[in-house]
Image 1 (cartoon, rainbow, N blue to C red):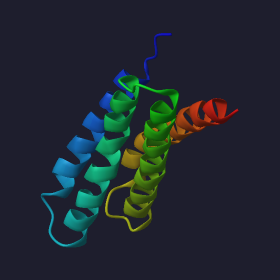
Image 2 (cartoon, rainbow, N blue to C red):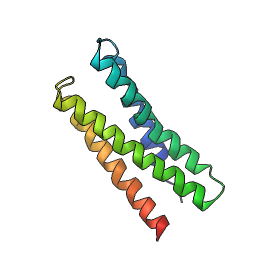
Image 3 (cartoon, rainbow, N blue to C red):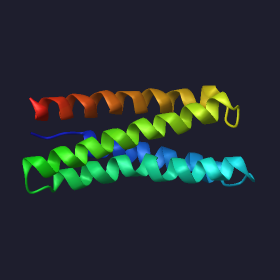
Image 4 (spheres, rainbow, N blue to C red):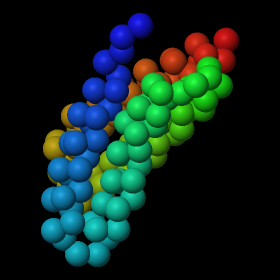
Length: 115
């Protein structure tokens, strides 16, 4: 079964990288949050890719569960950036929407694999 999830999570990671590049131009808290966001936001796709190459159903499930956790963490950092008005929430809304969709997809896959 062909999935667009690896491409979608890669595109999401690119958007996160661009956001973090903008955040790195600032001092203090923005840089600190940027470092947290870059780790979790790019980890989603990395774990999906690893899952695609898994050698067992258990390994696949583990990688997708990790990707889901990373997506939830990413959403947390995006929400924090918006709520603290470090980045305009209108700029972050599309990223948060995509992150929520990724969480839904990854959660559904993980649930299906559990059942």
